[in-house]
Image (cartoon, rainbow, N blue to C red; front, side, top):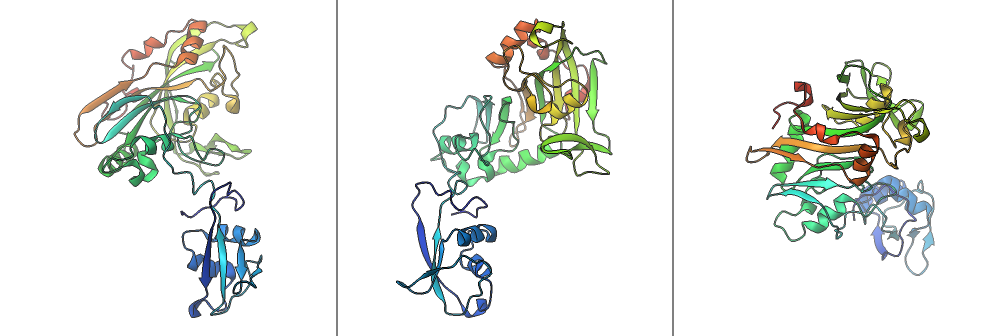
Length: 361
């Protein structure tokens, strides 16, 4: 059972393990939580403290054991007891699940997947099952080097839950290590389609962020959001996005678009959390449907209007140039049609080398 930082009471109906323990001489006089962290190393000390407070630790021989609820209790050499190891959502999260994945490309080293909006990529609080990671584990069961043997099941980059589109996933250790290096070196080209509020009136091509003093970090006023921050004053990382106008839509006051809308091709040069959404909002063009960053649910959209439509890279093992495209799903396609915008314009050659990325495939 893996180390875990979750709530000790979230065991559900999973079977409990009652493990006996005995204090060795070298732990004499230590706090109970510190001693147990040595005797039960697969759990973190903070989680063991939760177990102690929840009454899951007893002291003394059976049948006269006493529940001890104080982590600071000092133990003595030779003392015995039991600890009730309660499976938690986190410890149960990395399990294979049968899932219908849209596979765009598959070989011995790679998968390219078209992720639907609504699918969480990696287990996290509130989503300990039903994630892309669970589906990858279920799909690759039985292979010589299964996804379960790779960190994060081979996931090397992520998309937000409500962002659709292309993702590359490693299937072998050599591919994963190479992909991580390539992404860090900006050798993987990732382009997105976005529908944003307000007609675009500036330069057709615009770079946002990237200056040494500007980046993306936690919003100092709201820790649940990201924001463009001054790196000299707040924690964050440099971020650069290229926006290219593909088309403007006329104002539609009756539909909540009093200042019109625009269709953008967005190129990531860095991969910060919510990067495109934050940068678009920072220049006055929040994405349609993105309530977190100022967008409104218009023209039938109930999620941010963002789709990872193009992925280009060199195969991490063979070196072959690979380019993949994924048309937007129905909700974005219908929104474009309702606004009279043609997303097929994104197939045209980008107007700037910045939009193509290093070593574009």
